[in-house]
Amino acid sequence: MIKIGGKRIPMREQDAEQRKSNFFSVPHGYSEEEVITEAQRCLQCQGAPCEKHCPINMRILDMIRAIAVGDFKKAFFIAKEDNSLPAITGRVCPQESQCEGVCPFAQSGEGINIGKLEAFVADWAKEKELKKDIFIQENPERIAVIGAGPAGITCAVDLRKYGFQVTLFEALHKAGGVLQYGIPAFRLPTEIVDAEITYLDELGVDLQLNFFVGQNITFDELRRRFDAIFIGSGAGAPLFMRIEGENLKGVYSANEFLIRCNLMKSYNSAEFDTPIVCGDRVGIIGAGNVAMDAARCARRLGSEHVHILYRRTKKESPARIEEIEHALEEGIILEELVTPKRILGDENGWVSGVELLRMKLSAPDKSGRPRPVPLENSEFIMPIDTIIEALGTQPNRLFLNRAEGLDIDSWGLIKVDDDLQTSIPGVYAGGDAIRGNATVILAMGDGRKAARAIGRQMKRLSFSS
Ligand code: FAD
Ligand code: SF4
Ligand code: SF4
Image (cartoon, rainbow, N blue to C red; front, side, top):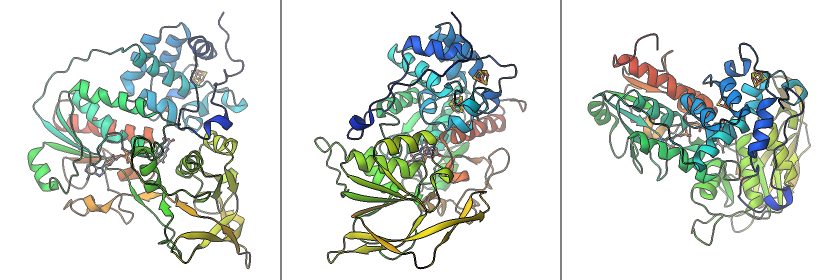
């Protein structure tokens, strides 16, 4: 029987006590019965507001309609039409501020669980080894894509579907960008990322790993060899607080910590040699998604006392609500209204503590959030043996400085026009390289937009495409 509305079907999850010491996926995913019941709650709203609030305007309504009648194959093909990585976006998109946020049931906290429906159909198709035959009308133009993160992958996939000869250059030994090295396996299992990446191979994208553009090949040489270029090189250079003690042993950027843990698998010490120092008392500076990921990794690596040190309060945290709740359930402590003044070290140069300053909130700043201001003479010392700084990142200038003629702003972000074309004709850019720290789906949206612009430039797509 079809039931519209009603309560959201709860997601079964690994118990917090159990999961805090493993890297397996936290949610178990819906069963076939559960996913159908959840899809049947959808009102099939006229004008589908959810689709308008998906940055790639996925055909959510049609996908849900197919799920509601148990036609998972059709649902998968619909999802895959617009979205090259549905198993990933279904898991990591900030749905509450995008597609699900405008669902009529969202106000009561019962919005249709679009992300989990999307992830279900993608996982179902993977299990069934379902493939969609794609006819590619080959075109001779050669396009280079720099960086195999969500922006580069989406751009490469779309360009290949337009028939271009696409080479995707990736500096690391695995494709995926942040999906591979940043987001931990308990949120986004590695095999899901790997499976989505095989799609590149199936389409005939020439993926060149361990290939750093600017080092293995100059940017000028790349321009000579290719008809157009897309830069999706991300924003991988960490920002630091620039306070006393940051050079002590035991201080990490969240990037380094997560790369060691996730990409280089330091949590699996039986099979991998990657060293990681993670003491019993860990302090994470910042409270965004990256901070939550670092904190939850530290917990799983065995740290008993993990403190998130945040200068505002939980309410102002930029992290997804689900991630904060999961972190708190796992025993992570959120220290609100504090900011580090200096990091203290022992006689051997290792971190031994952090001096914190208490804060209070005052009138909102430019971001619209209350501004934290220090309380005079409120300093206190917290014993800590590992510090992880999760303060944001900016593009790595190693490559940008070698790309002559490429205009960047004072943050190192590549300047682009409305078509995502840079200051160099025929060179496009998108994702974190133009936005700073954004989201997977926004990066994918850029990849798609740039691919269309390149298609038009090569006169293989009409200007209305
Ligand atoms: P990236 O994913 O950074 O990929 C860029 C790639 O380019 C990298 O693989 C890099 O090695 C490669 N590269 C760089 N320079 C070169 C070069 N010169 N030659 C060759 N290759 C090069 N977003 C969400 O939506 N949801 C989340 O839950 C979420 N969690 C996050 C958690 C963490 C820990 C982090 C760090 C980010 C998170 N984000 C999340 C943000 C999101 O992952 C990014 O916005 C997104 O990955 C940006 O995609 P991108 O393709 O622009 O760059
Ligand atoms: Fe929602 Fe993201 Fe899927 Fe779009 S891609 S429908 S925003 S989960
Ligand atoms: Fe269904 Fe919600 Fe989208 Fe309406 S907004 S079509 S109820 S998912």
